[in-house]
Image (cartoon, rainbow, N blue to C red):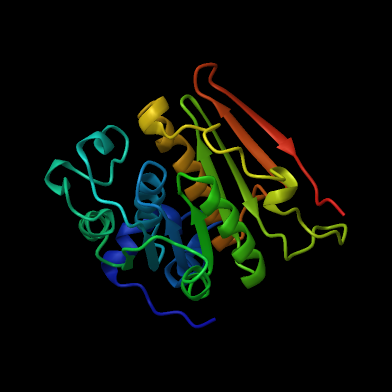
Amino acid sequence: MSYSPFSDLELERYARHIIMREIGGAGQQKLKKARVLVVGAGGLGSPILQYLAAAGVGMLGIVDDDHVSLSNLQRQIIHDTAAIGQPKVESAVRSIARQNPHISVEAHCLRLNQDNASALIENYDIVVDGCDNSETRYMLAEICEVLERPLVSGAIGRFDGMVTVLKPYAKDETGRLNPRYRDLFPVPPPAGSAPACAEAGVLGVLPGIIGSLQAMEVIKLITGIGEPLIGRLLLYDALACRFETIRYKRKL
């Protein structure tokens, strides 16, 4: 793996990472070389993008076909009032440029589907699911498995959220293949059983918590530190301030 030297400004910006034994200069270089695709520039995508940009992930891809609306601003903190009516990917690119000029951003103003997802995903090392619908979640899980790309999956409800990491093409320490998304959720929920936040509402700070956890999992995958949430589903209940972890395995 070839590395490009850090500028003096980068060394100062990432100093608190570089002095950490677990990250160091080598880990920061891995972050700089990484290419991460974030699907969705909304509630989850906002903190994911902001923290990965701040961490120095060298290339961030953003996929979203929506425009910023006033009701988004209660939770989608990468956007501001001046961005209302503009494409979310364009608003997010501007915010990231102000936050960290040392990284690159690719904007994809489109809706992922079976026709375009594979060609897009294969250009990135890791995919982060910040979407808001089951159809896209299942599609991402299947395509990432075929392309052998780690997928950091997250979802939120009104007061709760969940995070897991999927690498079903790889084996665990026992030689068993890691679980798929369908091992956790065999079938999509019936239409209408999981109302969108426009119908049910969502606590504004909640996607910040879940999205930050997703960003942490991405950094762990890139740098090789810690134990990613592979085969584990992290559940968060905001009202009780309670975290629980459920283990799940590959079904034969």
